[in-house]
Amino acid sequence: MHRKKIILAILIVILGVIFRIFLVEIINIPNFEAVTALSLLSGSFFGGIYTAIIPLSIIFVSDFHFGNTSIYFFTWSAFILIGILGTLIKANSSYYIFKITGMGFLSTLFFYLWTNFGWWLTFGMYEMTVGGLMQCYIAALPFLKNQIFSVLIFVPSFAILLSFAFSKIKVPQKDIKIKLAKEEMRS
Image (cartoon, rainbow, N blue to C red; front, side, top):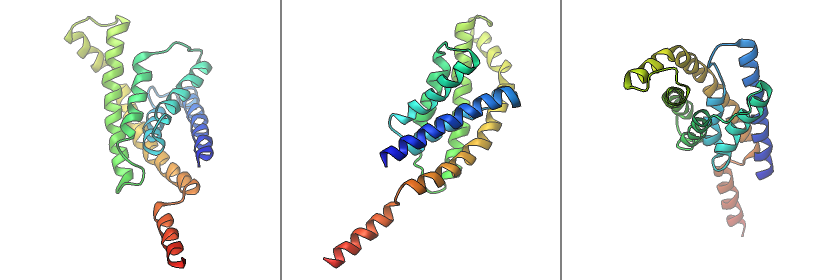
């Protein structure tokens, strides 16, 4: 199982890199991206160290393509925290698609607030006042709209794909219990 999980994580990183490059270079809608969805779902489906490794790998590898090798604390930490938020919703829970999509929406709001706070704090485009921070948030509203739209598309789509993939590499718990019960009856 562990080897299959690693292979699936690598495939998700490759998918994430391809999506990030494609969406930036071909679709070219600012903040229309799949990294938020994949970060959230890495926490929900994989948990553990994968919660950070999957989103950071997607960003790190795709940043090489874009020629950006600088580490942006606010962006990268946001994706890690979104992965951690994903661990709050287990992939086998009732109404999973609705819960994880709702968490995707909340994650987008968090990303917007955190990264724009970072922009305001570090780039000097706005006055270092509450009014300057509000100007920064207002100027970023179009980006928020695009990111919400992308999350509402990618979170449920990828959740369905990952549910299918995990059902192929895992034996469901109830099947294990049935097998154990049959073995006990035989002995």
